Image (cartoon, rainbow, N blue to C red):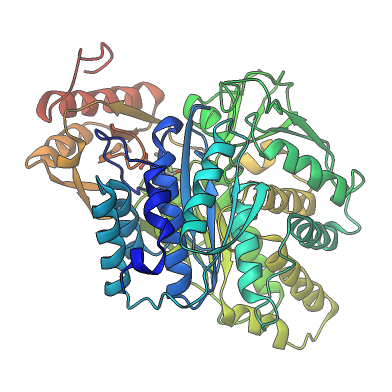
Amino acid sequence: MTVATRYPSLVEAAERHPKPADVTYAYGTAGFRMKANLLDSVIFRAGVLAALRSKKLDGKTIGVMITASHNPAQDNGIKLVDPMGEMLEQTWEAYASQLANAPTIEELLAVVDRVIAANKIDLSKPANVVYARDTRPSGPALVAALADGLSAVQAQHRDEGILTTPQLHYIVRCLNTQGTPEAYGEPSAAGYYKKLADAYHKLVNGKTRLSPLHVDCANGVGAPKIREFAQVVGEAALALIVTNDDTETEGSLNYQCGADYVKVNQHGPHGVEMQPNGRYASLDGDADRLVYYYMDNDRVFHLLDGDKIAGLAAMFIKDLVTAAGLEGINVGTVQTAYANGSSTNYLTNILQVPVSCTQTGVKHLHHEAEKYDVGVYFEANGHGTVLFSPVVLQAISDTVSRTPAQALAIAQLRALTDMINQTVGDAISDLLLVEVILTHKQWTLSQWDQAYTDLPSRLVRVVVKDRNIFRTINADRQLESPAGMQALIDGAVAKFANGRSFVRPSGTEDVVRVYAEAATRHECDELAFRVAGLVFDNAGGLGDRPAEFL
Ligand SMILES: CC(=O)N[C@H]1[C@@H](OP(=O)(O)O)O[C@H](CO)[C@@H](O)[C@@H]1O
Ligand SMILES: [Mg+2]
């Protein structure tokens, strides 16, 4: 039976969401992401795909998040969430792109039928989908297109309204584990707040509270959500000052604020008057990234990015595992090529934890982190989390403590497994993790920052004719194509002390990214712009050659 005979209303519904003729879509590093006015057909079709995915998995609930994270307000996007709250399986990403690009309704139906046949999907199985969106103005219309797609194939669906991306991931996992030994929590925002707040209270119980934390919410969904959380956790336990919380003014989202802005520009967000030694953090537009920062007495800005968070978390958890007497449990970390060389050195040589390097994109890090008993993974930009394997969870519940100190460490580890969102990087949950560790240590941000000194680094974007000619190997650290390019980069790097540079095509923007680090700011910039120049000159640079390229 074809999908059209099974669901006669699908054709008519699809006709209401025609594909623009001249656009090619790709389900990339972070799902589909582009100008919102190009997304109607993509989102309708993604609804159909989400229903098929649910049917394939015997009616397990699939999540759909409508967001474009740190992109400008006029963009939007969509990501599918698999049943345990993880990112959509990679083979299905290809289906998502094929569906999105089918030029006509006939071809769309043919693609759907092919997906059904290739996966032996039984259309009589139920389909369950939940979805949410961030605060973007284009959200409601796109949600309507999604609901149209879901209804056209008779999926059960539920609108969770406005949520952070990690909250939706959490809810998906809760729904699919309800009533099982892996039950993850109550499937609602309220359940999420309570789970995190209870665990946080256990972890900071009896400790001296830190000074207030200023949280820049990128004028996005993090603002209302962190306020809701603050109510539940209580000001006595955690003092938060919410800034950049304007979700109403058009164009304010991510504009000169938020985690990506702070990381890329290496200075504080607009809308926040930084004071020396105050405590500051920024979320991104869908609240799955987090960075911290402060200004010292000389008013010099210091960033504590995802690498610093990974170092802090790995140190704390490793000590806790030792104190808990969990012998044989390994704590490992996962980074990408963008991790600062000093952080890799700190993890390897000071903390002495294993470090794996994967391709860019959290799904790669997540899968690698699953290989450790406790896997700490963060991208330098502040997206990450900690995964506790079933082996550790079992060890935590089985270990009989011999001393009060051991019992305390085990109780704290157990609370950490509840407080850390294990489905995906989560700015609110990660913020709590950092606050717990700093509270235990009674550290200022400057004390945390002492762990190691970042090597100066720089990211440069190069616009080229065709970024698809760039192919990387060795976890993005080297190019195999275009031919000869890597030798040129190696030649440039060799001239700099502690120099490192690599080039890869972006998965979210039509550019090639150049990363460089070196012993001094001056050398780092020189290396970055030299390599950018090599790319521009030898691999199809477009437009005027930027003046700073060497
Ligand atoms: C250098 C950098 O930060 N790249 C980001 C960015 O990917 P690109 O493929 O580099 O555009 O967006 C991804 C999705 O948010 C994130 O996973 C990744 O780390
Ligand atoms: Mg994000």
